[in-house]
Image (cartoon, rainbow, N blue to C red):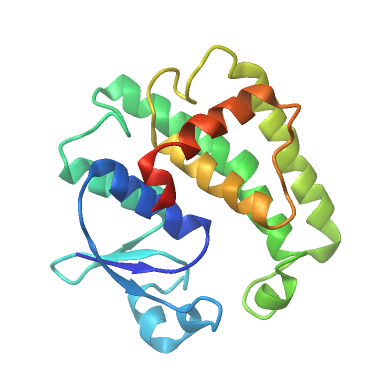
Length: 203
């Protein structure tokens, strides 16, 4: 297998998941800043042009971070990161969906339409006039999550999961692009400190 890797929170999600699984996968760097992911060679592999992508041994290619992580987890025989039972997997997928739609998408699109506008305006449809509202929605959802995280070490209770990895990678990214953690969200801050201390956080 080969992971087409680049800068950004999406590739980091997959790298961190791989690190948590304790496996090694060959990486090929794609220059996102230069737009290499929008050029013909990469678009033939992944027609959406998004990063990352995983080329399997048979030459087929998978993209989208949840699909990639779920595939890798299944190849390892189902780990607690996704869930070892049907119930745990449903719980993980539920939280991944909530976090992705409520926080990740709004945080990322808020960035792409403001601080990242020069980089993205000719690559995707950006909405500069909506940037502040997108960021605000992300913060509202983070505060909502903070309100129900009390007493939990991780999003899925005491089980570290893909939901934590996704949330961490995007909150880490947000802090670097003008969307810092709200220190009043004490449960999220404590959770963040637990996750950043993991070896995989530097993947």
